[in-house]
Amino acid sequence: MDVTDLTDLTDLDRLVAAVRASSKYRAVNADLIRRIGARELSGRGNLKEALKAVKNKLHQVAGAYLDHAPRYERWLQELLAASDADSLRRVCTRLMSRHASTQERLPILDAFYRAIFAAVPAPRRVADLACGLNPLAIPWMGLPASTQYYAADIYDDMMGFTQAFFSVVGVNGVAESRDVLAAPPRGHFDVAFVLKALPCLEQVDKQAARRILDAVDAERLVISYPAHSLGGRAKGMPAHYERQFEQLMAGSPCTWQKLVFQTEVVFIVAKNRL
Image 1: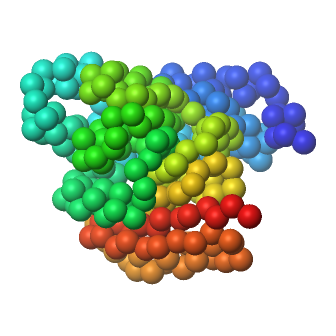
Image 2: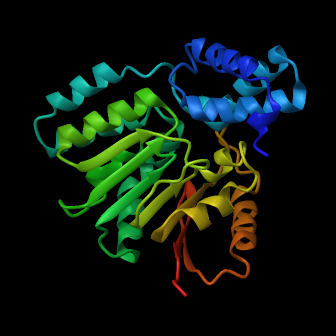
């Protein structure tokens, strides 16, 4: 039975409204808030405690990664003012620095995508799951002009900005706010990025990695893990995540290769079809 069947829906609606009344979480996907809220209410039975728990969980999942309040309208104007490829890259670099995940990748951006696409055939369809601001790295990816790019994250306003970015740079793309664990994207993809996202998604669902691996229809998954914490400490993280990944793949027919970078460890998984 779904946990929402065990929960007072009036309290659940009240909880969702209270979370989205917060300036920090007003743009978070309502379906995700409802799913987390239903679980917290069923376990606690107290609206105040459940509300605090949901906000804490959302901070762990995504809130800790954004640098203050994004100014998407201003960002879009900066992109529109870019007069050539070099100036566009400069703007994208500046904007990516506003999100912790992409900010960490900036020093290795050229080498990162060069290595990945040397190991992956030119894709016709790309999925970027729990993407944050990673679609702004498209100018570094060298994708064919005909490539279709699908991006999903839990922030409504961020995905609105990403859709506008696609229009500005002429990318054949769709961006949408989505709880990718509860509702994986439909359709077949040549490549699906899941970049430094699994540790965050596992804050919501301990089986997140398995769900993504099983549910996303992609020829290759590009999964990465952070090499250090947001505070900059390594704490044995690469070795920890490599063991975790190997446990995930134990008994799987998939094959994979590892790429090691200064800021993250990447596994390119080929989902062999039986």
